[in-house]
Length: 199
Image (tube, rainbow, N blue to C red):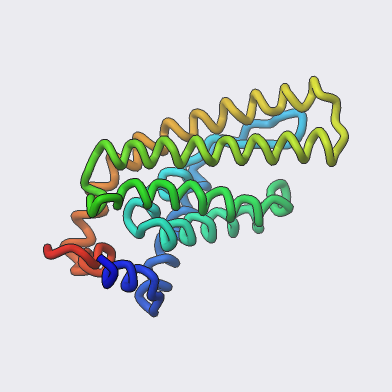
């Protein structure tokens, strides 16, 4: 077990490539979206969170978190409406994918236990929503000094969009995970993603 943990901590060229690949998928999936205007700016319903959760489930907590955080942060950096929040996006999406990855791999489950995958996806999304809405409230009310009524109205809209994103992300990530696992086995990289595996 100690040896496996040491393997998980080592980062090499392979890790950089696979993190970059999943980050690119997280980035691209956000473009499949519907923008939702709010009094305090815009939010959106998108498919980016699907691949954030998949990143965690496939690559584990740290690697999956980096892929999710990097991919979504770069999207924010390219959109003037979100650029100021890019560092927060990196952190919040990292945490989402990290939680999903930790649960999916707990007890050497190797992301094959549906209950653990479901729990990880749900808890990752809940953590993200709490962080996202908390940051939005502090920014809108305390920093921008907006009226409480306007802030609460914006938060309701953002919560609705985030809840839709969460439900879609959890469902689609669980549907797509077996497909991605099958692809990793056919391509011969399964043992690198899951170093403890004997398959």
